[in-house]
Image 1 (cartoon, rainbow, N blue to C red):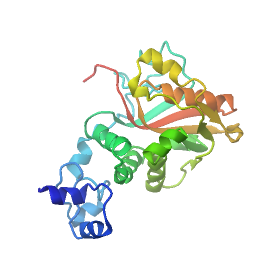
Image 2: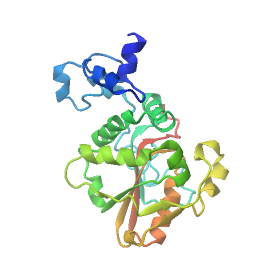
Image 3: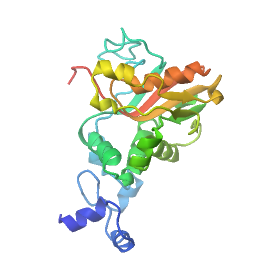
Image 4: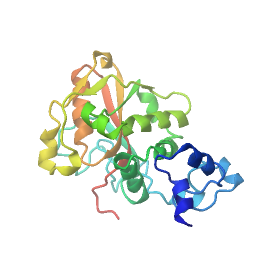
Length: 262
């Protein structure tokens, strides 16, 4: 496939005539570039992925994970695992759609750091597919995307967690928690967690969030794109609980798995 065609399939910001020209091309799988025929529009990941590429993604097993931190485990429905047993967790539970590796990781990095916003509908669709047969979301009254500080939001131009939440909701059916954008604010600019050691991560987010009184007596689900150590989500959960929330869970597109099962 030549570079011109590839640029039309996975575009950066483009002039109007180029976007119009892209409409004339047949849809291609965003992973393997296979042409998607008419029948694929009836498949779950249409019009983004072919069936084979969808199956090959690193899906999180809905049973073999730690209910507290979301890490992969060898036994089913583990209440606490070795990675979180000795830590103080304000999150009541955590879930993820995928392991943070392979193609999913590449797509997230392209979205966050290279401005590829066109990937957000795909990622939202994939997260919805992960929970399409689950009643887990019914436990929560409201969903809060993890906010960015205003300085980082201006620099990036968008909050990837909010985009993910929007497309997640769009692909889900009834009983979806109401998205509340203003119930949690990031009031202090912090260094990116990926640049810090584990010890630095634990204090980097102190007093970084402020929660609205509207969370009082609510069951809140926090949503983010990636969870590694869980520090960001745990600090956000603590803030929301201090403001009066009953229960706080976390839902992420991808979870960094710390086990040695592979």
